Image (cartoon, rainbow over all chains, first blue to last red; front, top):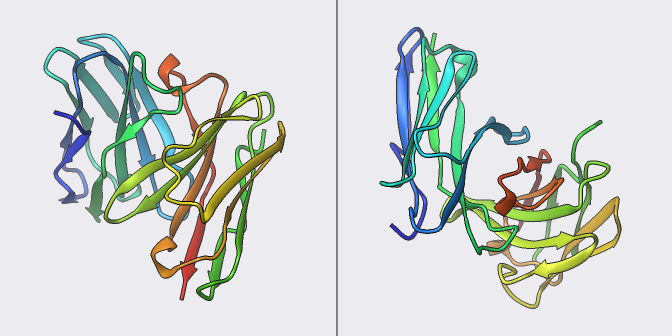
Length: 114
Length: 116
């Protein structure tokens, strides 16, 4: 994998459903994986920064896992609420890369219907 | 702290006009980034500064784009002359250390540019 890929591109769920989406990233020279939540017209908000293989992080109903050997991360939302509707972006950085080199995926747009 | 502050929030301009976008990073952050968000290409890095010095501008699309950081609390991104394909959301972001240090990068709310 040369780029950061996210799937699905969009997702529509009902309030109360749990959901998850995937970020695939280059595993060679991997350093860190970032997850952001972006509501239109607002700043992308940092959710997690993960660096270690097997790392799991949690913030309220949102959690994320990381597999650096195979180059993927999952983001889980338990009991989705309408306020979770947003675009979820992941980005990776690599050793030896530019200090500005956060490579972003195109995001997963989540819509939660009441 | 107020976070990263960008202006204008929205701009509609005619093709050929000069556009200047402004950014105030979070105080104390050494790194400042300019990103562009489009439907086709997602979020792309245009340029970043470390201690006010431009380090990597390889993402700047062409000579019509320029960026400056005259001091630690202010940066501009200029497009001259603007073209319809420049229509996008331009984000400014800052961080204490760079992305390769695994640090969080904090984004502004973006400048929504439409060139007609």
